[in-house]
Image (cartoon, rainbow, N blue to C red; front, side):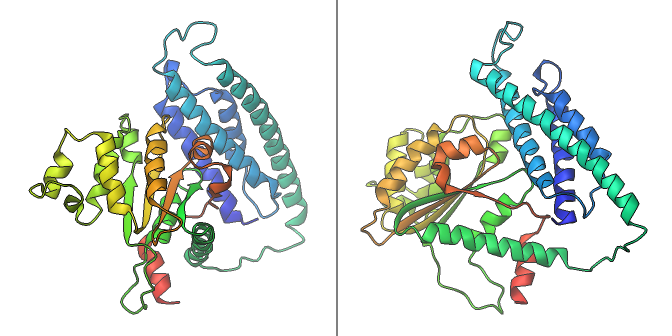
Length: 349
């Protein structure tokens, strides 16, 4: 197990917990906070070494996932009334989830504490006998190679299933590189000295949702469709009114969701398209399920076109609701790698 990988996970968990603690205070405190803080205390006292067992990685993943779920629970609970009642603003199912999560966190805290003790005894008895030799490596290059490997897996997952409508979720903790990986998959651009490859898609659409949702706004399907149409060429030619410009079309408040969906369907029908929904963080995903029905109807298996959708999110339960359990790709978290650095490596390959 890479020491750098474990150190990244440790730092990320501590950072996410501190942010969650700062943003959810008082009566809106995240559930099970004391258990998360107990794990944080063990981690802060622990030095990551090469002797750490491999299961530590899975422990950190489980804690991160539990933290994300608890943050969502806190935000769902906030607008509810009667927080001082016997259910304290939570449903029965949510209480059951917290019961199972509490037991898991206690178990993980004990494992981490035992690992810390074991690591301390191992290092004290072995460091005097076996010298530690640092082996140099380029972290950026390793990260790039890992991104390329994961990109290939996602493309294979989309293309190997044949024509028609295909979807996949890039699932991972915050800061793990989900957006960057989606950019790597969707970007067919190359530096001037690198030959271009044939385009996989006629139309590429990128919808960034995290910023909108973090402000507390509710996702509106009409706004998403208009955003998508702006990224489609010649959207104004898809309506009957020849005098209607593209700007007028997108600013027309009288158009209903169904009318906008029909226009979008005409824009994508027979085309090879890729749509990326980056940063799904909404409790209500009805907008996506309705949009998905239209996309499936215009992405015919018998036609020349096909439709690919990539979704990035940190919420596993939402991901399964959106695309099912078989269309999930769990990203392997990597240190930050910019698109500029990826270009640099591609140009030198």
